[in-house]
Length: 394
Image 1 (cartoon, helix red, strand yellow):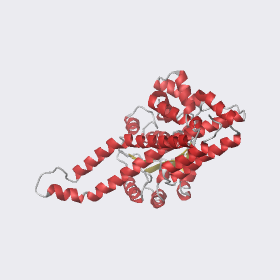
Image 2 (cartoon, rainbow, N blue to C red):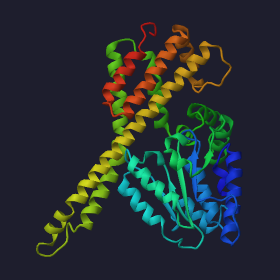
Image 3 (cartoon, helix red, strand yellow):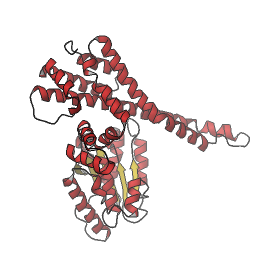
């Protein structure tokens, strides 16, 4: 199977990338390489496969057969070990100008294996304004064999001067049937479970896989979707908000605690903690105090990002629930993301009006905006749950 086999329901994008990979091979051989450019921007909704597409394209550029899927180059790109591919995954809330300048210097070097040097920048929309300007300069004046692959939800998430210099590849949300087919064929998921996970994930392949294979993920989703009918009073609203925020904090702790300990221990070791010799240990550890403080700042930012992402995922599940409610209220013949909870969706639809549903959806979206603006999560989520409450939903 070629490297593009993991791109579900993206035939148009795959055709563009295959043609570009062929043009790139022509350029390597000394030809014109028309159709290949040095900067690409992969956009699409969450779960559409932006980074998967970028990774597949990187493999196709470095593979002698334009992405055969089984050679050493393809395998190295797949596992993240190819010497000519630099992976950038912002772990905190943003990506700084200092980090970007270091990246630009690294990207300026010649390819190790003689084809292309590739920078694959996931979540490029997290660059700060100053970092975006540094990135723009690198994209405007790239070395002849350097290719930038940027990933962002929308072209509008990048400053206009960057996106105008990139070739945009737009990915769409895969159909439910396509996602279910992937789960059944590649993960041996039973058909009923695969269809449930594909619907619930609304085309997000990674989320669908977790729902199909991880019982804890399904339990968390059930807890979130039980919220609308549990908000019968102010106390219940406060409790629901506390539970959502606490769960997101637990997710962040689970994802970062062990990693933080390893990173801190390694940094202390680099700066000489535990070394022998008179005055050596104390002096080197003191010298590394600034680096240790910088690491702690990064770790806090990463934990905040994971907490925010976990909370946002719960809010998107709630948006999907009320979208289904609105569809039922209008009698729309569309697939419900929460088909497995149709009786609850219909109960809420009967007990409220479409105007109520739109008001609740707006409350959830306002909560997302407030969280993005660094409003205290507990306050933002409490305001949302109070807005979702309806005396009629008992």
